[in-house]
Each structure stands twice: as structure tokens, then as C-alpha cells.
Image (cartoon, rainbow, N blue to C red):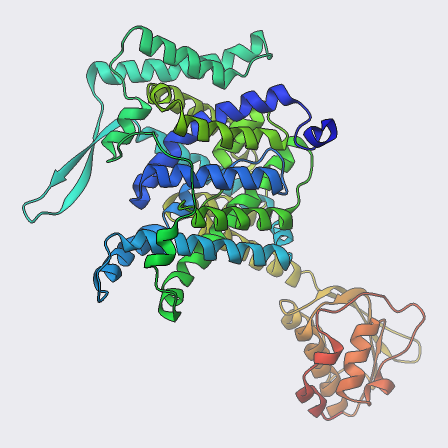
Length: 553
């Protein structure tokens, strides 16, 4: 039993207390995202419990906190609304059909994520450049900060003349605003100052308890978790233990039309969820100087989403804000995530009245401190010292994360970084030329030869004026892809067309096999050497296209 317990934690006290802290910070954020997606807050909280528990037990990164994240929630908004409309067009109309489509979409989302883990796609997150990672962290910190600023407002339901309902936000003013700011600053002050006195108790949890006791003890008129839920249209925090949702299978039409409707949303949600989870995992790796398993995390996230959908919850993924709070509070093991999920369930089932009295100001203060910890302030210092392309990527990823969403930001950042890398390597191709005693001209190629550098490579040669004997030596170069091979073919053809003899030296075995397959003539062109480099080419010799054999050599 001891060994089993140690599997989940190395420091039980820290993990338990950090888990409780994170669960308190989880509630308003999950509820806020539920309002964005226009679903019942208890549906989002159930999803947070299920996904958080399964990901904590089976995930590839101990200490990573998962739940019903906003990055995923916003994807479902349009689908739920359209689903409600589709339901009313059935032969036997069904109200709120969008929720059943949501649960089916979450299940399909989980299946896609499991497939990503099975095919080991999680490892590709390691290819995300550091500037993209910095931009992701900064952009997400800004998004979380702005979400907390919106907590300084009240929501009210207004009905227009044509019967359209909408929520209108009105920011706090006067005494209420000053009390809110005072409690937020008090919370932040405790989180900042308590570790300087003692680290035996978690600062964030202590700050929440102290601020709550002050608000309750002095009967301050402030927004609380309970009032926040009611303002958004909820009925409170009280819920039931999640059970399999049988209505899903009774009302949802299992056919191709349903699949076509939910598949685009499921794929996008799965992609966004995995990107945020895996990049959060990378951040925890850096903070803890350990390494997680991306493929295992993909499978765990997928399993959590499938179970959430089956039990009537919404989709989710790793949450950077709650994860940073957990790490800063000392949570390192799986027990911290397990404790977060179990505590969240306890709040819903048994202590809803107590948790509803917690002032929103206390949780906002915790999130503000998390934003300060998360934002990469060093980016301001290094932005003038790093290459211009990296600085551009950092700024663009941060901006796109704030304006659009994380998935688009990461894709844009990776594409820009890849193009920049290709360009930088393209201009590094060099050719050192020399004439041997017998009149043979030797081109010594330096730098990578790939699709981006073939134009510069072609410009190095002059078949018309070169002597009759030419050698191209690739000893300091690396032929990287199919485009590079085509460039070599073209150069050889040009020299042959001029009636000149050309030889190729120091090509890898992969390159030679592809050239021999294209034309046996290359056995005369390529010089075999014991010093030939050994590396694999991107192209597979078995898949080499036949049209290249049409070169007339």
C-alpha cells in the first residue's frame, strides 16, 4: 500500500493542500466558461471533476491540472446553438438538443485524442520553438488577466422589444469597487508575504481563508461564488454525483448526419485541447526540471473526455493557470490533481453553501498572482537581444492568442518559425571553387541542400564556361530532401548537355540509391568513397517517383 501511495506523490501534505487550493480557484473559472458556452455550470463542473481525476491518475505529467477549460469551451458555442435549432426541426422536436450533440462531440473529441496518443503524435510538441512557447505563455496570461478584470462587474438579463434575451455587464463603482479592490490586494499581499515568513502552509489557500473570514465576519456586501453563479443564470453550486447520461442515447440520432455535424467541432476541440495540455506539460517540465510523457498525456486526456461525455459533462484539457497555482503551492505528484478533483466533487455534493460564501475577490487575487508568475517578464529584457524573426514570432503568438485562440496562435508561430529557419539555412549554402593540377574544377559545397537553398545552389555553377572535367564534392554539405536531389539531377544534366564530364563525391548511401534507381548512368557519375557520409534522406528509396528516370544523361 505504501508503494502504491508513493506512486502518486512524494510529498502528501503539499499535494493535498495545493489540490484544495486549486479546486477553489477552479470553480469561478469553470463557471465563467460554462456561461460562455451557455451550458449549465454543473455540467462544466462535472466535466472538470471527471477529466481532472482521470488525467491526474493516468496522465503523462504529474502535477498538471486538467479541467473544463475555456479554450475548448468557446469552440462549442456555435455547435450548441445550431444543435438546439436542429433538434426543433426533427419530426418529433427535442428541446435543448444542442446539449446532446455536445456530449457526443466530447466523446468523439476524446477518441481523436486517444488516436493521437496511440500514433505517438504527442512528441511533436517538442518541435514547438521557444519563442512560440513564450508567446503562448504571455498571451494566455493576458487572456486570464482580462477574464479576472471582468469579475469586477455584475451581469443582468435584459429583454429587447423583439423578445431577444441577452446578458449585460455593468462594472462596479463606488464603495463596492473599493472593497473588491481592497480584498484582492489583501489576497495578493498574503500570497506574496506569507512565504517570506513560513512555507509550512500554502500561501494561496491561507489567503483565500483569511479573505473569506474577513468578508463573512464583517458582513461585507461583496460578490461571492454563489452570487456569481446566480447572476449568470445558474441556480447554485449544489449538484449530484455524475452518473451515465442515458438520455444521450435515447435522444441522439446515431447516423452519418450527426457525425458530419459534430466532427469539425470535435477535431478542432481535440487539437486545441492537446496543444494547450502539451504546452502546459512543457511549462511544468521547465519549472520542475523533469520530463513528462506527451503520448501518455494524449491518451489520458482523451479517456477523460470520453468519460465526461458519457456522464453528461463538457470537454476539457490541461489548464495552465490552475497548473501554475498547483506548482507554486508545492504540488508535484499525481495526488495534487486527484485531490483537486475529489475536493471539487466534495464542494458540489456537501459543502456548496460554504463555498458559495467565498468572495470572488479572494479567487481573483489568487489568479492575479498566478498571472504575474506565469507571464514571461524576461521576454521584455531579451526581445532586443534575440533574432528579429524570433521577436516577431513571440509578439505575433501573444497577440493571436489574445485575439483569436491558442491553436491558431501556435500554428501561426510554428509556420513563421519554420519559414524563418528555412530562409536562414537557405542563404548558408556556399561553394568553394578550386582548380586541380590536371585542370579539373572542384566545387566544395558547404551548408544544407534542401528545397529552400536549391536556387542559391544552382547559381554557384557555370556549365557553359567551366572546364571539361568538373567534380562536385558534398563532404561539407547534407542533402536533405527530394528537392535537393532534383537540383543535383538538373546540374548533372546541364553539364552532360554541354558535353562535359561531371563527378559527384561524398554523397550518402540514401542519395546514391535514389540516383541509381533514377538512372544506371549515375553509377558512372558518382564516385564511391570509404569516407562517404552516413545519414538518412527524407525520401524513401522504395517510394522514389519514376518520372525522374526520364532524365537523359
